[in-house]
Image 1: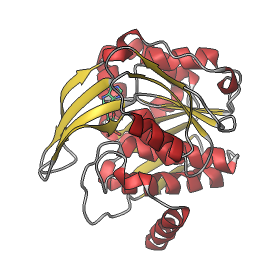
Image 2: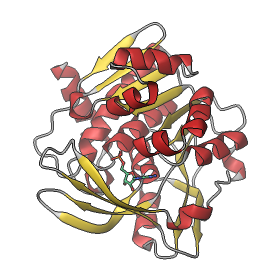
Image 3: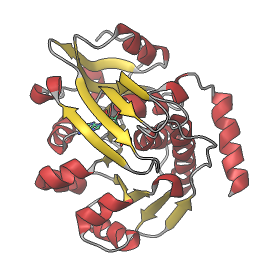
Length: 304
Ligand code: AMP
């Protein structure tokens, strides 16, 4: 798709989806979702982000208009004949419990990501949740990125473990939720799992614990961040992707990899995750101002 933005500092590959979601309060059909959509939207408040993904001809123009309004570069987003990726899920009363009802890969079945010329030298790369084989394909095309992070999910741990292990061996940071970290490593607690994962390659591991916050491990330190307490969670879909997008966007914006940069990035991540769950789809993110983000960041700092 045509682009009019500066070269992205952060590129994000992941899914762009139409989600159908049911919570105890409401059901919504075919709303904008996908790991790349949430991650790019969150990152767009901190840096120039570019999206790599694919949609079908049925993808509504208003969604691409929203991405553009947020300043997201779309040179890497292909639009082809066929249907957009669809995912549907239902949340229990305890919103930490989610069941996937259906995943229709559609245009993703024959997708092979190609980085546009302006993307191959991007210093920051986020491999959002998508098949690890596609994540590897992006890494093969990137030229000496400064910092690469990856996310994953239980499906790939079960179905594409070998490729996932390859991805983990090539990235600087892995983001993973606590139950997936235990599944992947066979360890019994997060600390042991993070150590095991760092032995596979990454110098940093972020273990996400939903409403209980997150832990950032490096070989020298552990940093703990509680979640921002939100009065009403409307839809947790995309919280992990928004968290990751906030983290990578902030790092790219700070343009540094010191311990202080990582801590500021985890704070930004936590804030963006909390805004995401306050609405369905991108509703909690799309109308934010930088002041809203600064205000919540200060509130979180004051609480901790
Ligand atoms: P999260 O709540 O952060 O785990 O992310 C949810 C988003 O991930 C939804 O918007 C889905 O469209 C997307 N998603 C669900 N399953 C997959 C999958 N197998 N591959 C890529 N994206 C997915």
